[in-house]
Length: 348
Image (tube, rainbow, N blue to C red):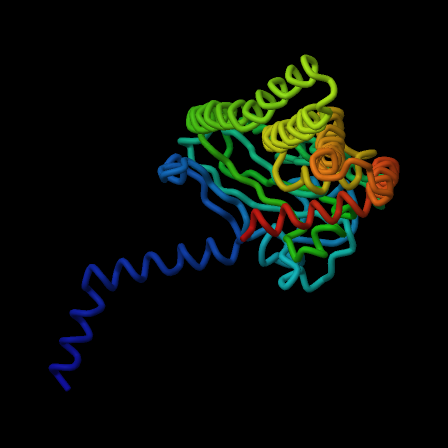
């Protein structure tokens, strides 16, 4: 009995036990309060980023008072993941629009320090920091007609105030995500904070390398196109050179448009080409080029083969031409079919 008492006293006075006793209440307090602690050490990782996917409090519906940092959201549901995977949607339901609130405890090392904000989603959002509207990404709507999805991926700069408590409120609508649902892709948003110097260096390196690939892979078919175009001009009777040049131009334009789309956006680009009426002007023109290049490549390649092996153009070719015109005017089936193929290929 005396030995057991001595061992108990030694355990209670040991450094390890005291550490556990001090750490558990702090951890429990952070977990219960639902706050995420941000400090300069949080950015000390390989990518210099902080991904904010967890601990978001969620409520369906739309009320602007929910942006108020003093609003009592203790009764709100804690979303499993802000990206809204289809197999793990909020229990309170997702009706296309809702508010997400995240409570941050910011260390002094990040007060008045600029950070870059990267937001990715197929819908539209408004970002509020302590009740103040910081950024709009697209236009949040109460229906698919009112909503304008956000498709760009350029980072934004934010400055955290010199206060420890920061409330991030996001008004998010995702009525335009039916295409993502068909592919079983997440329909929510992701927020990533990063060090500006790191993101500038990373993005600059990516742009340099991607531009080199874009120029090379789109330049090769364009070079062949010019070569065969000159051959046709010197000998017009060989029309196969003209059709091959048109096909090579289509291939080069397709490659160029794909790289250019990656500069502007991510997978939302594939969605955007299925709904050109609600995209930014830059994405609109790139998507038009993407669509025309596919139709041009298919039709000119067929005509090239017919010119080589068939003296007379068969009737089937004109069916393909009519189909190309139809898909050019009514692009839905073509865009969705090719988009599905591209996304499944890139994911494999």
